[in-house]
Image (cartoon, rainbow, N blue to C red):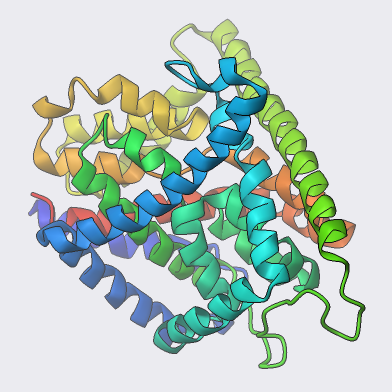
Length: 399
C-alpha cells in the first residue's frame, strides 16, 4: 500500500509542476519522459549497486580536493579562520570562490572548458534532448555547487537570453557543493546522500522543463568562448585580474544577501511568536508540507515528523536538520531514513534563494536580473519540487 502511495506521490508532484507551468503547451514531453525514465534507472542503480555510489564518491572527492586547495590559500592569509574545528560559512563556502572562479576562468580563456562543455553537452543533449549548456550546467552543479557553477559560467550567462538565465536560476536551487558531501556523510547515511546528488541533477532538468520550458534555436545552442565574435583577445593577466576582482565582488554580494534573507526569516519568526509562542515559519511550513510528506509512502506519525523537518530545512538549511536528526535516525524506519536524507540533501531554502539573486545581480544586466527577481516564487517552487521528486523516486527502492 505504501509503495502505491509513493508512486502516486511522484505523479502528484509532476502534476503540480504542470499546473504551475508558464507554458504548458510548450512542454517537451518526450524529454520529460526520457529524463524520468533515466531518473528511475539511476535511483535503482545507486540504491542497489555499490559501484554506482563509488563512482559518485570518486568524482566528488576530486572536487573536494579542489576546495581544499583553496583552503590552503585562505590559510596563508587567515590561518586562524581555517585551522579551527568548525569553519564558518564565509570561510568554508564563500572564500573558496576566490580560487575556483579564476581557475575555471583560466580554463575558459584557454578554450579547455568550452571544449568539455561542447562534447559532454552534446552527449547529454543527445540522451535528454536538452540544450548543450543546460546539460553541462546540470553536471557542473552536481560537483561544484550552485554558486560556483554560476560563477564559472558568467561569460555564458552574459550572452544567453533572459529566459535561459531564469532556467539556470531555477536549476541552481537543486544541488549541493561537493566539498560538503563528506561532511554530510558524517551525519546521515552516505548511501542516501550520494543517491540524492545525481537525482537532484536529473530532477532539476525535469522540473525546469515543465515549469519553464524554453525553446532555443540551433544558433543559440552554443558555448561562449573568450575572444569570439571578432573581439580582440584580452591579455591573460588582465583577464585574470578581472576574474579575481569579479570573484571578490561576488563573495561580498552573496554574503550580504544571505545575511539579509536569514535575518528577514528570523524577523518573521519573532513577529509570529507575538501571536503565539508555538507558531513559527517552520511549524507553518510543516503543516503545509504534511500532505507531500505523506505521499512519500509514510504513516501519519512519520509523515508529520518528515514534514516538520522539511519546513525547518526550507527556512534554515540542511545542516540544521542533519544535526537535529542524526542521533535519532537509527530509530526511524529505513524508508523514512532514505526519503528524509534525500530531501534535505540540497540547498533548496530561503538563504539559497538570496544567494542566487545576489549572484545573478552581480553578473547579468538589469533586464535579466529583473526577470529573475520577478520569478522568486518559481525559483523556490522549483527547488522544493526537485527535492520532493528526488526523495519520492529514491523512496521507491528504499524499504
